[in-house]
Length: 416
Picture (cartoon, rainbow, N blue to C red):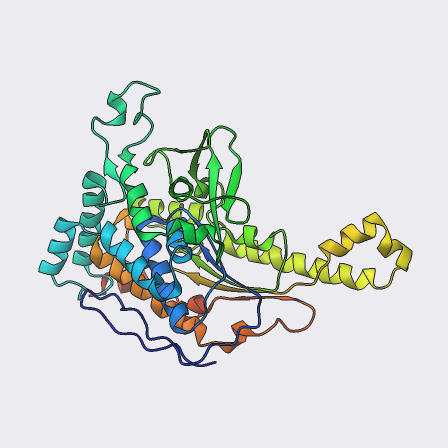
């Protein structure tokens, strides 16, 4: 496999659109899926991942997302290939126009602070505080009067922020006619507020509008539920923060190469104070047990393989029966390669990292995603069929790269 195409750095620190590769990268999988988890401001990491994929000519034909992952997924599916990276970057630049945090970051050395720097952590908190107080341009803004000052049942009484401007923002960055033309399959997850049922809005069955994307990211009590055809929906992350299972349980199973981009790592160190407790709580809550899901899929593939072998040994009459046909359908021996790309938080990032919508933080997350994806895409084995009868492979090159002994409090405090 050829290395990713070279990219150029823009003045703001975000990589400019890559030059198209001269030759396509062989994949050998009919389904190439991009699976995008929720995580608020951390979602810029997914933009960097997608940019690296485009540079390597690894282009998904199915993108599925939840919460901020649904927004990124809609921008990808709702634009032609040649403008997707630029549209993604444009969206993230739009929602990170935070004058105080951005000006302060430049004043203290934009992008020059090193992990562990106390000032870096303080700038992150400033960016998060500005978002709490002033919202995010074109995304959400504080309600006035606040919800506790409004009567129950009135508009605005159930959320701290108004996301009305997000609809116009989405429509300016996403061509929903293109999405519904089904050039690329799009799936976004949400939760029915009334029934509590988890649901996917999918271009295979639904006509996707901006409201479907907003519903997937309507995390209470910050954001209001979104009405779709008489029902109200909240953020799909309340039930599951990753759409991997939806990809695996597709109505028509295919040999699949899936890039799962998680914004919360299930792995982490033991907290030492209350802020670190809050961070670990979020990481555990929203990591959606990625490895448990892949372990379950691996076990299921073993069962399918065993059942397929067993059906080959039974009489034709048994295979022709209704029960035999049902088992044969379950035992189809499709293969899966799952490439896990998981954002690893820096030491200076606190519990506000998912709502720190500053430009500096966005740039750092974007570049981290780009670097991690470039590293993973250099491994040609991700494009190869699983060996033997397993029919399943999972890769986590980022974890292997970052694997090192956990620093002691003394070592960490000594960082510049």
